[in-house]
Length: 388
Ligand code: V1P
Ligand code: CA
Ligand code: ZN
Image (tube, rainbow, N blue to C red):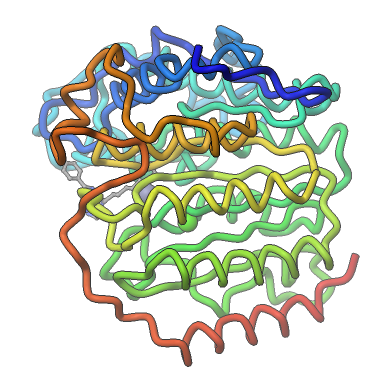
């Protein structure tokens, strides 16, 4: 298995459900659960599963999903009749449009990815895992009573609610190219969860249209959630160096001030260069550095997936990030193993496909040093108001 060994005295759990990967949103839909099969094949062909505890996750129960979602929304999700995917107008609870189609087995799919995040959360709560990984989760847009942006159930909110039973404070970090609005909204009024999202922001021109630098929590006097919702709005084309410096500076300050007992990192891979929906220029290296930095903080860490619409690059990023979690990233052969199932998918860009090299059409970098410095200043200022 490439000499990959279990890290000593350090437990990583990997929560999977092969049934979930078989679901289809419809032909032209960018969200492809099959990307999880591709990621898993890469992780396993490198032999990384030997260094983790692999769990076949169970489905979340209705009662567990009720922790956040309303009964009538869950009832509708469970009984909605699959409609043709080209039906563009959304119906009740924003279900059935082009973003959130009602497909065969939709409720099973939701309960599976939610169950995997709940399993991961429990592993951290009982201190059986130092890092718990669920690449099928990270569906950050779902609201308590509404589907949004390819997300139906909010597994992150469910997992954090579970974690709050054990940990006094949880830091949520989101590196998906989109704003983590569903998680932000769920914990808007509490000081026990700090949410921090890095995303492309361009007014209403980029989904979901929220995540301004200035909206940092409720403004009503005495509301505990004030200054606990932090946002890093970015422009097209940000590169690894800029992102890394911003990420480490801001996350470092949040951890110093908020002192979280656990961290949930949403690793949406649509912030990579060449993503079908994204706008950034991150490489697998830069994206993975966010995981490495969070791991280096030595705080119980949950890794979830999220967006990511160029499947070969999603698989590369999450395989690389799995190697960081188990600490073998430096010893991996950069050339993707010959015996990797679906290896031909990675040959899309080169004859000798590598784990880290991704090719994307270059995007002009619209992020100036002046603006990025301003963002750090603003966030530092917000954190001064944040009492813990
Ligand atoms: O822009 C919109 C809506 C549709 N209009 C009424 C506004 N939707 C976006 C949704 C992006 C969701 C991202 C999810 C995540 O953060 C987490 C899993 O990554 C959208 C886009 C777009 N380019 O922004 N939907 C679609 N593209 C789409 C394309 C083809 C078929 C179906 C949906
Ligand atoms: Ca984000
Ligand atoms: Zn996204």
